[in-house]
Length: 240
Length: 240
Image (cartoon, rainbow over the protein chains, first blue to last red):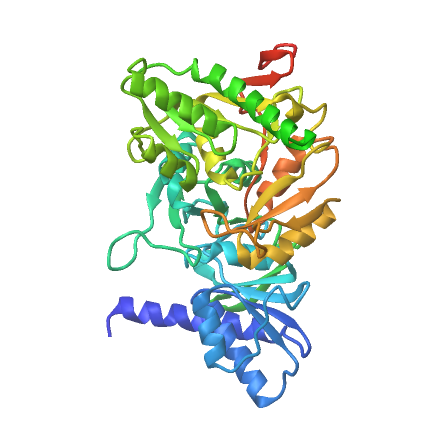
């Protein structure tokens, strides 16, 4: 086995550890947000196992993407929509980059709009990551994904350039522009280290054609991080 | 003829007068935003007539809705998209409510997203209205339309209530939820007089699931108003 393949397997192990810790936070009777992405799906499997064993009862899930919805259905988990519920008790989701304030960049998986709708409706948002995602400053390691209506692709790209960023249209693995669950495009916007994430979020929020962006600020309650030395928990307003 | 029918005809005459005045601002060689709605369509017809007569040459238009695109095509006007152009010289569009600062509420016609994308890319935005649209304060006469992704209808409605508004799902004339050109819903949000439109715009911009809203602030260069006493022009930073 090559060293690179071994590293990928190790990283996936870390994701599993972090997800398993998050699954312990789930209680019977909860409405749960099911996040999208490679770490969140481990949590989904953990929840399904506890549900099957009977240690979790009367739970209802709300999925952050069509992909996760299909997987949750396959696992036999009870699903609801916002037509059925008012708020979400707990969401377990992944992230691409996490800063020391527990602000995160999300959207590497392309589901940032639903992930943010769910996060904003969630009482306790848990982010599960391996420790390669920790960062001293957002933007250092990851671009900010921006979901854009097709009609506005050019003006929004020009706007990102005006803001000092570089916008790159996300493509599928087979080439061609990736389409989100809503039929929009994703621009991966490379800003470098972001000095003022709140200001950038406001500017992106005011730009017509931007459906949503991957800066999730002041939304995280707890980050569960798995690294070589074990699993640790970072809470808001606590020293990491 | 009933008095009411007479009033509607008179109102349409006023819209025609305002639109005719705006059409005089169009020059050969311009890229023009074609607004959506009952007043803007009069302008479209006026532009088409000047184009046909030859007093306007080498113009290119960018439509704010599929409806206007079809009408412009029918009239034989040359159309472009944002793939072809970088910016727009002049846009002529309608509005539902215009305040003394020339801030406006738009979106009664359901095309607010494209209208705002076009307005933000426009060097000189002209709003044409009859004088029933003038208002001392936004929100006094008209709700703020908010375009929402279907997935987020409930959480966004709850958010409008939290902000002190009342959200009403817009329906088609035959019943059933109206769908925008992007396949989204429109919530007409009744706030009453809006003391701080900028603050409300920021709050709406930060809410996930809100694709766009009908507050168009600091975007209007000139308002052309037709009333019983004639047509007058209001310019930004000038006393109305």
